[in-house]
Image (cartoon, rainbow, N blue to C red; front, side, top):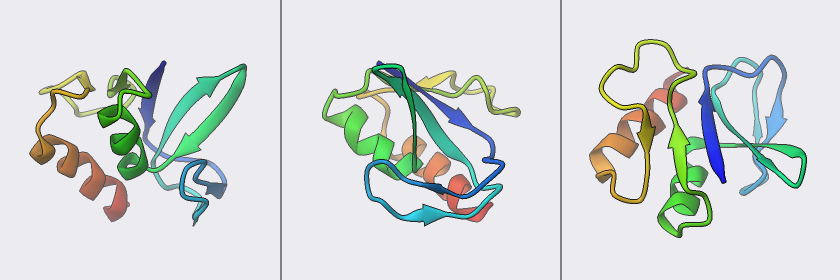
Length: 90
């Protein structure tokens, strides 16, 4: 299962994993499971990718990301932290 980093949400959402309500216009990770679209924090997605429950995080939907097109189980923590911090700043 792939997941996609989306630049912003048009409305508030509840993280599927940790159940925290995130405000509108905040970035999120979108994934489809059994024909249902789920939204999650980048930090929550990192845990699922590292446990291999999700294959990787696709970064192609975010503009200005030239260095990587995805993050997976082999991605260093420094690269994950860049995207987690970026998601918290907006």
